[in-house]
Amino acid sequence: MSFLSPKRLLFGGLLLLLLAPALQAKLGIVTVAPLDGYFDQQPHPELNWPALRNNTFQPRMEAYLQDRLGFRSWLLRLRNQLAYTAFHQTRVPVVVVGKDDVLFQPVTIDVFLGRDYAGEEMNHLVRRLKIVQDSLRAHGTQLLLVVAPGKPRILPAMLPESYDAQPRNATNYDAVVRAARKYQVNMLDAAALLGRWQDTTRFPMFPRGGTHWSGYATALVADTLFRRVEQLTHRDLPDFASHGLQVVTETDSLRFTDNDIQEILNLMYDKPPYPMAYPRVRFEPETGKQRANALIIGDSFAQSFYNFYPYYQRLLTPTSRYWSSNERVYWPETTPGSRTVSELNLGEQLAGRDVVILICSEQNLGHLSFGFINQAYRLYRPLTEADKAAINQLAKELESKATWEEASKDPDFSWHMYEKAANLYDHTHL
Image (tube, rainbow, N blue to C red):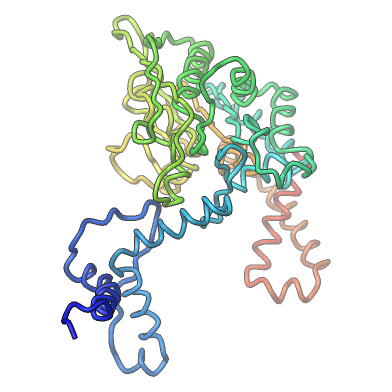
């Protein structure tokens, strides 16, 4: 029998196939690109008697080895590609495939359909925002609310077919825009702007594989946004203008977030993007111009103005700040001191600002400003002793009406009753 008989070759091939992942993991024979997105890789578990006895070592070791299995990235990408190609599905629950392979996040579709509608609470929050706006103005600081659209609002015809028959209800976007106009809050409705521009331009406001507005839309919005800042602050900001466009058609040429949700699908090959345009933005010399001292509080849409183009860097003072979700100081990256917003003194942070800009996408309107409105309201309208007494009395009344089951299940029951009472008090005494 020949040493290189078909059976032996088959057996050797199968053995090599079985050993290949282990050899790759140990030796790194070929370079394998890591998966995109965030992954919390399991650490090596500690081997000890309690872990063995409690049966915690074995599953942790299994997870550790699985994370480091050779060719794991390739195999996962192959699995994901088969699901996408054969069934038009993703293996990532936060992404769904719409018509013409346009990708969406389900949460943005739910918001567009009004499934998180907060009703009267939005009207109350915007009323309070108006008081904050007036209080800031009295201290020499303007306020501007920027409402950014979700992708479904701009591309409703591209939603997955399963949503075609879904009813559309009142939305937080409707409530916020209506209340802002009613109470005369300074607002830039970028959702309405992009809706109009989408019908007249040949370049996308939202990319096929991204969930944020495109670099092209960012440049258009920036032109309107900073002209509005000039009007409010009476400052002549440095001039800037677009001089031509760069049009790209390859995924590798996309910038910043223009392919952000397609990347986390971890496919073997990406769907080609729609032709994407990037204006060539030129900033003029600052001679005789004035930068604005701004505090920007917003979600990830606010990052577009310093990552696609250096608007913050060129139009705002070095003392300006961007607080991501009112939690972290994200820009400038070299900000000294604490980068945790809760550790900062709000009054000191607002002092001397020319403008406070709140940038909130449609997805986050349910918690507009991420708590800043309430914090600033309390800064300028602190509770009096009479207010505190009334709230305490209302909290006691709420506690007396609560059921035993409600009280027994909530370890912070009294505190939550006080918070509820304070909220009710504010609604009636705003």
